[in-house]
Structures are given as structure tokens and as C-alpha cells.
Length: 356
Ligand SMILES: *[C@@H]1O[C@H](CO)[C@@H](O)[C@H](O)[C@H]1NC(C)=O
Ligand SMILES: *[C@@H]1O[C@H](CO)[C@@H](O)[C@H](O)[C@H]1NC(C)=O
Ligand SMILES: *[C@@H]1O[C@H](CO)[C@@H](O)[C@H](O)[C@H]1NC(C)=O
Image (spheres, rainbow, N blue to C red):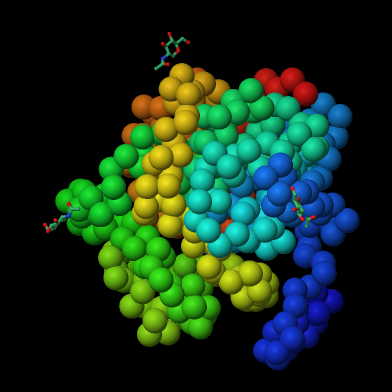
């Protein structure tokens, strides 16, 4: 039934009038909500209530995604009675897509998430982030620690408040010296004028290299300065990872085709300019160290978020119990090794003492 529907959907996607299916299993369509947050931007989010005595888990996705990134976690944790809050982050899906980079400063996005939690009456939630979502988990811990019981970071770890003190171009020189390639060289292309249209015009190429089967290609064709711009501009292709089914890829692509990339790329523009660095000056210094239980799921074949470096950093920056799992996986651990990640998160959550 689903595949028949999706076949019809793919045909529709090829025509001019494209649209997303109304129903995206395992999400329950009646549990999506919209909230106009304090600063006047509308957030679209999934809100599945907790069973009595169970805490709520807040899942924050990264680039280039929507709440749909967490489909395997929704089915797993919803069935076990956990509450779920899963927003489309700023710039994506059903959420507002401001075009000015300043709107993406971490302090503002953190407050947006707090507005959602206030609207839902939630305290002592468990935060789980992936990719840029991990940065927001860290900033929520910095600005609003009283709202959370614990913090989980997947693939990308904790960005401490001084993470962006070194200007972006110097970071590339430093990573080249340590790793032999610029692991965040691709931020340069993502911050450049016109990158959004180049990506939209070569969406298959972009998806191939963002979700590759051979994750080691990241070192050559994705991360270094100039690499992804060259790959995508030339419409090059590679085997997509088998952890994203073709029908799931069609759904993800349609979200991005409709929303475009001008807004999402602002997540990069704020870190290649001084916006994030200036914004981080407002973090209370006493909140720089994480003082709640932390989970880090490191991806051993992520050549952007390099596990050894991120583990060193999180060891230095946490001052409560620290649980580290290392996965034989590329960047997309919640998709690639979903069962391991779900079970490890569940064991960790069950071991936390949470008053709800
Ligand atoms: C959200 O609130 C702002 C004012 O805070 C208002 O200008 C805007 O129209 C609202 N958006 C929607 C979609 O209601
Ligand atoms: C990076 O390294 C290159 C080559 O060694 C040098 O020319 C350039 O000035 C460096 N840039 C920064 C920002 O340190
Ligand atoms: C870590 O916590 C201990 C007590 O729980 C405290 O004495 C110590 O100063 C803390 N360290 C940091 C870096 O916050």
C-alpha cells in the first residue's frame, strides 16, 4: 500500500505540481502542531505525549533535514511510552525560513525551542541532537539548563562556548595540519553566494554525496575546500547509502525542493562570519561545562565530525556521568545504525533518575 502510494508520489514529483504525502509513517499526522514563538516565527513540530511517569525526549535534527530524520526513533520510543517533541528546525519543512543569517543565532533558536517546551508544559526533558542539532543541544544546556535532565549528542558533539573564537579560515589551516584535509572546508561553499541554487539544480548529486554508501568519499569529494562545490556543480554521482530507502530519499528531497536551501545554508553562514562568535559571548561562564548526564554517540567513519577529536572535547567539557558509544558508521548514525543507537539511548535513559 505504502509503496503503491509512493510510486504515485514519485510520478507526481516528476511533474510540475509536487507535494509531500499527507501521511508520513511512523509519525501520527494528528500530532503535528504549529506555534508562533515569541519572536514571531512559526515552528512546526511533532508532539507525542508521554505516558504517566515517562519523560519526554526532544530530538533536534541538523542539516539538511526535517523532523522526518528521526523516523526510526519515533517508532521506537513512542511505542515505549516516552513523550516526543520533534521540531522542524528553523529554515526547514513546515517551520519559518527567514533569509537573514542573524535569525539563526543559537541564543535565538534556543529560545524558540524553550517557547515550544513552555507551550507544552514540559520540564526536565531529555535532549538529543544530531549534526547542527547537537550545537543547539549544547546551547540549550548553556542558556536554559534548568529545563533539562540530560543531554545526548549524536555524531557531532558539544560545541563549547569558545568553539568559534578562531575565525573560520584559520580553522581550515589547523585541520589540514592535524588531519591532512580540511574537515569543514565545505562550509566555504555552503556560505557562498548562489550555493543554494547550485544545490537545488543538482539535488541528486547533492544527496548522493551527503548520504553516501562509501563514507570515506567524504575525505575526497565532500569535506575539503572546493570539493563539494566541484562535485555538485558538475552533477557527479555516487552510490547512495543503503540506510536511506529510495522512497525515504524521495520524501527528504521533496521537503528540500519545496523549502529551498537559501534558509538552511544560514546554519553555515553564522559560523563562517562572526555572528555565532558574537552571540556566544552571552553564555553565562558558569554554564560552559555540562553539569548533567551526557551521552555521546560517536561515528567512527564520520570524517567531518572526527570521533577522536569530539570525544576529547566532551571529556573536557562534562562534569557529570558521561556515556560514550562508538559506532562503525558514517555521519547518519540515527539511520545507519538505528537499532544500536535506539537501544543505547534507551539503556542510558532508563538509567537516568528523572522526576517528571
Ligand atoms: C506570528 O506572530 C507575529 C507577531 O509576533 C505576527 O506578525 C505574525 O503574523 C504571526 N504569524 C502567523 C503565521 O500567525
Ligand atoms: C593558511 O595557510 C596558507 C598556506 O600556508 C596561508 O597562505 C594563509 O595565510 C593561511 N590562512 C590563515 C587564515 O591562517
Ligand atoms: C565538577 O564538579 C565538582 C563537584 O561535583 C566540582 O568540585 C568541580 O569544581 C567541578 N568542575 C568543573 C570544571 O566545573
